Length: 335
Image 1 (cartoon, rainbow, N blue to C red):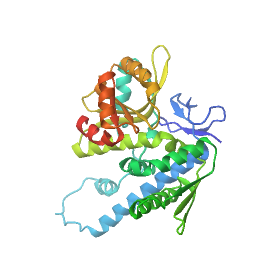
Image 2: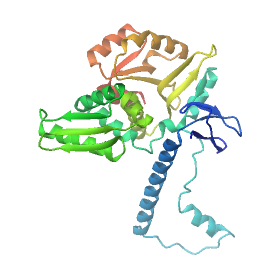
Image 3: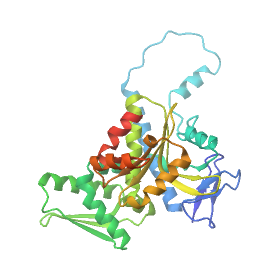
Image 4: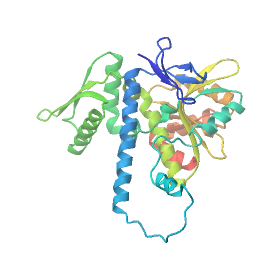
């Protein structure tokens, strides 16, 4: 049964009227909240619990092996010992003072553009970000896997077979290791490797989130992770969001794949295309005019472009075309 949790007041409620993955007004405070399938909702809770538990155990192990320096005795105010003990461990349910997308939401409000931002769409506590990083960093090797999985989803097939006999031993081992890792993290329902024939047999996962990942969501995750990596490298404050739905004053609705805003700068919009993009160029040109961003800050990242093609298209249109292989260095220069 569909369910939602309000990020503002914490209200949890079932909702049988609203389609899954669409916003609805919170029954308590009216704040827009995204409705999720119950199974997906519980799976995400389990993932977050596992992450918190792992981090907490690591902290306990670190404290157990770190000697505590002796301190000179001093008078303590009543209740100070309790406060000190409480601060020695992280509060597991604590939330940051500002959400990662706060600055972006304020920028859209100033532009009189309604922005619906789902924080869970950029939550890196799951495994989507890790899988996307591997796919993007070695895309040429994994392109055939992605094509076959996408084709099977479109045709409603349930299985994918990969013949690795013509690949080098190293490439074959990399693909089998990656497929096995995806299976272990539930991206595939089944995994089997026929060693004599060098064939990987995969059974597709039916979960909508996994299908969306293979059908293009992985590139959005990859773009987001490259931005976060650049932020860590330069220690820059960065507001970010993924899958932002924007409504303009005339009620036109658009969805923006990845949005970034380094502190003190205008936002960077990244639209991610894993297939045909030419028919959408005019749409993106018009969209960027409405956003009012410089062309350098509206990026069209395409898997089917090389550097020469990207330079030519960037000169022709008021957009910045960036091949997948150049996205990492491109964002490092901008953030």
